[in-house]
Picture 1 (cartoon, rainbow, N blue to C red):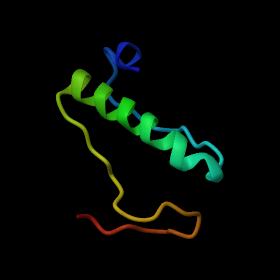
Picture 2: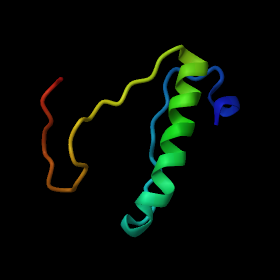
Picture 3: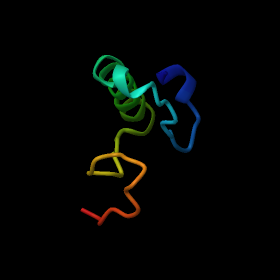
Amino acid sequence: MTELARGAASLINTTWPPYNRWPAEFPPIGAALVTAAERTFGLSATPIDAVIAETVTAVAAV
């Protein structure tokens, strides 16, 4: 993922495996995204600190 991110202005995660596979699939996806962001931009950010669900309409800034 780091190689694919080179030259990008931002990274957006649009990877959403089925809910029942989140425990197995999200940790490596998240790790790859953080690593790519750190190596590409020197930083990483997670813009949401809440349960991700269809019912969430707004999240307060932290």
